[in-house]
Image 1 (cartoon, one colour):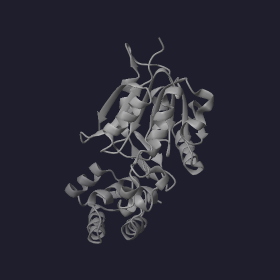
Image 2 (image 1 turned 180 degrees about the vertical axis):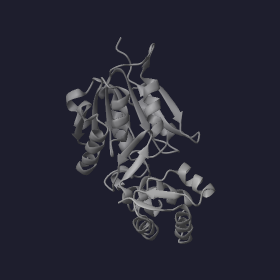
Image 3 (image 1 turned 90 degrees about the horizontal axis):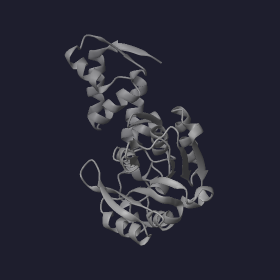
Image 4 (image 1 turned 90 degrees about the vertical axis):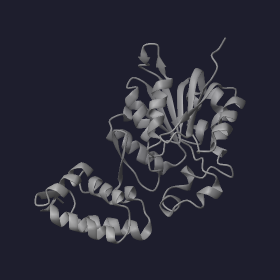
Length: 296
């Protein structure tokens, strides 16, 4: 339902909502994603308070979403049902992890690691382990439009969301959804994968139990809780990597901010080489990559 009002009224409404609590950036995100008013357009209203504003939702609807978020801690992304990520807009819900900004870097790292002498390889065989919302699978399918991809998750609900996001961005024909735990879902292509990416659960259980309410209570523990030391999933993935990757194939992992050395050791123990730590947007070692050795 489209709603039209004066900018002054919207600005008053915004100030009133913030008096209830919450961060201005979060409310502005809601105005953008649910109201259709970008942050830049909102700033212009401060200079032109008499102009008319058209919103995609009435203020009553936006206020109800905001107050529910404040009272329960439920993420706005879940309440709106969408989330921007890289140059994509994705469907999100409580069945899959909300895509994080730092995970966007995995796509850039994957492209860099797979670049040949003449730039990005035109066609590769890749897999995304623990695909969740399908954010990485969508981005990889768009990066290699002539490639073959597999998106793996043990959660049927997550695979349903991933399927809708793949279809939303027109890449569903290039990605096969596979249900199962890590490599067990890829038996038919083991030894042929040139690139495997994964953002697995890596938060130690004790840390996960004390996360903020919006994460701990509303996002799936399956996608967050990595066991006592946070490395349970990463151990499973690294142990099967040499068999699953093609000769020279790359494994790229996201991990917890303090796990870089431990993950590198697991990659080395698995017989992989060219092990490299990569930094996130804040300069923290958040990713690790390694290759299966080439055959003699």
